[in-house]
Amino acid sequence: MLFLETVRERLTLVGLDDTEYWETISQSSAAGIVGGAIYDALIARCAIQARAEILYTWNLSDFQRLGPEVAKRVKTP
Image (cartoon, rainbow, N blue to C red; front, side, top):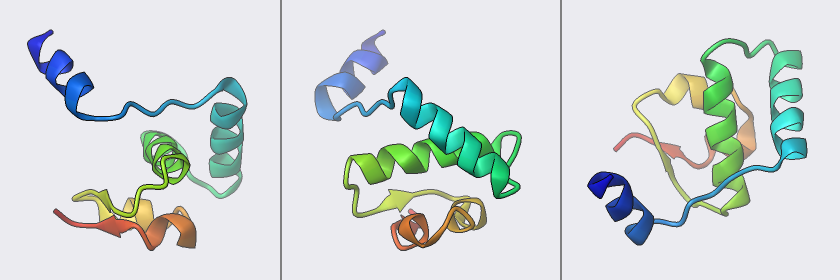
């Protein structure tokens, strides 16, 4: 709980509504993105919604395949 409290104090939490979840999962599925990569798509959608300039990940290829709007934000830490 202390860790989560620290995160909450220092960061802005971003969530999706039910329509945004559905759209992201539906679009990802149509693009052949399935399984655990759906979580990457949901994270990317949150990053776009939050207007994040950079989305840090060690898994560049999975995020880059989510389209140019995501790929331009992805960097390795």
